[in-house]
Image 1 (tube, rainbow, N blue to C red):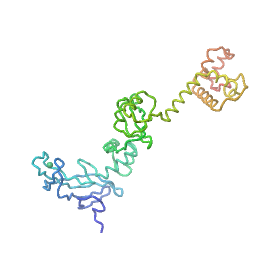
Image 2: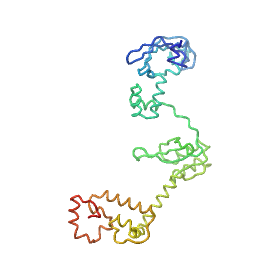
Image 3: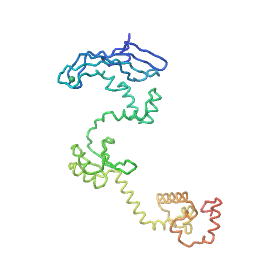
Image 4: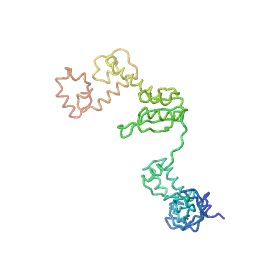
Length: 338
Ligand SMILES: [Zn+2]
């Protein structure tokens, strides 16, 4: 026959189940610690001199839809070492209890796993569904109390900045480029902080960074052995910015092309006069149209439908402006019709 200890506490030693009491909502497991002694946490000496016992009530993982609470009698032992400052200590049951813990270890690790997967608010909701009422802040405290995982030093490290407080404060994020996982956060973006971090990891062969001067200095000082490269994202980003600047400088050339293209002439009333010539590449046309549509959508007044260079000029429409305004106010917002 299966013993209750094997059913309820598999692979946990030093615990005996005395009784199990089940009511409609709660399973209460009456158990006691059976350890004959304990190692003193102060000096490490073994003691088997019992000094009384008391009850603890750690919450355990739910069973068949019911909450489970242990009524656990733990033992206190007196330290025999005369030099030790610690008089007594409570024997913890490995895998089941910890000092001042209000939950069993398996309950704690289950909740921490939920917190890691879903964080506070969603985690608390899910925990409630599986029968463990817990606040989101308690859940986050359990995650916070987890030891940091050991991360092997990366060989190829990516360095970039991250923002907190809505972009008012910047720090440095370090990413293992090969595993694509962040490995550390530095609270600032000083070259000295980066250099110190890199210097502790002499195995770094490549530093992938943007062109900010503090990252360049930090990488050179902290990892002189490493090759410094610009990462793909920043290359594309820089190229994109350069292309945009260049196109902006040559707007006038594009204007000429806009007016020469029949399709755009239909779409754009302000470029309707001429309609001949070769079509422009699709990308330009699409970008131009997108901008036009956005400008029309954002327009609050008829004047908003025209770009700045059309506003200051005299126009054949000038003497009809009052009429056009009235039509607009009546609800006709179609510029071409107007
Ligand atoms: Zn001691």
